[in-house]
Length: 160
Image 1 (spheres, helix red, strand yellow):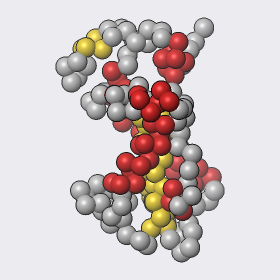
Image 2 (cartoon, one colour):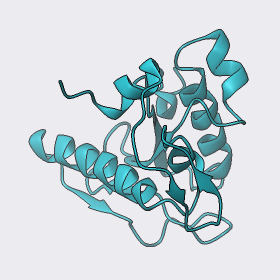
Image 3 (tube, helix red, strand yellow):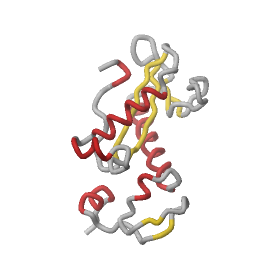
């Protein structure tokens, strides 16, 4: 029987061979550390896969987009993950930034214990703060997905 990572985490199964992480921490057989470590190799792969999925959805809707657009700088110089090249709503293009978060990480576990999807909602709030300086000529849509399944529920770019 094959069980995916999310299922294995929920069942408390061993997911990997114990080893030393690039950051120097020990990784046990459950592999939880790889979901919270900033240096874990799978971290950027999960992010890139989600961003590619979002871009493909726009392409399926025949909406041209660009990934990592230039000219939409935050105060720290980082860019959002994508931008529609045509107006999305009210004459404004939509930019987005995706994040994949682990609800078992220390910063999310308390909220996640209370409600499914709480980590995704908190991550969205953090993204909105980070991108508050993007010009008013753009709409911003944060997209947060938890490693165990839930994603944020609201369309924050239009205030709902």
